Amino acid sequence: MKASGLIVVLTVFALTAFAMPVLAQDSSSSASPGTEMKQGAKQFYHGAENQISDAALTTKVKSALFSDKDTRHYAAHIHVDSSDGVVTLTGIVPNATAASSAQSVSRSVSGVKLVRNDLTVNHGS
Image (cartoon, rainbow, N blue to C red; front, side):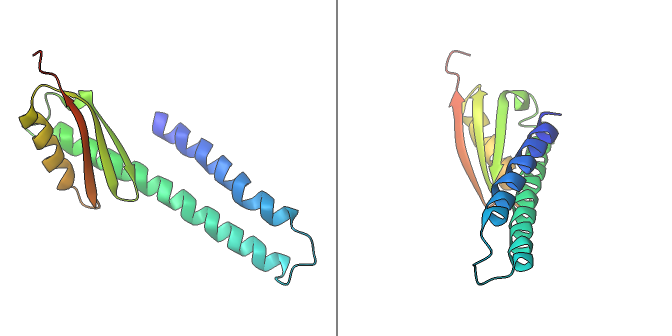
């Protein structure tokens, strides 16, 4: 639910950010308004597409963590964030082996280019 709400907010923001400058330009520019609108729409589309791809990749990684026999017990404590194929893991895990396992599972997901392992090991458990 949070991810879909975030996508809606980001979509509205992107539409405003890309469409308003195009609409605000004066008619003295060399490109036609139709061309500028098409370019703005194309930029908006690719921005929204990237947001959806990031959200899908985050979901795939989180699902893999919950499905793997070595990571499922602490997957709920791992936050996953994705941006352009780069996955960042944050949260607290019980030991260094768990952090390494989470990184390996994340790296195995199709579409992941790089995994940033920012997991904290809880030495107290």
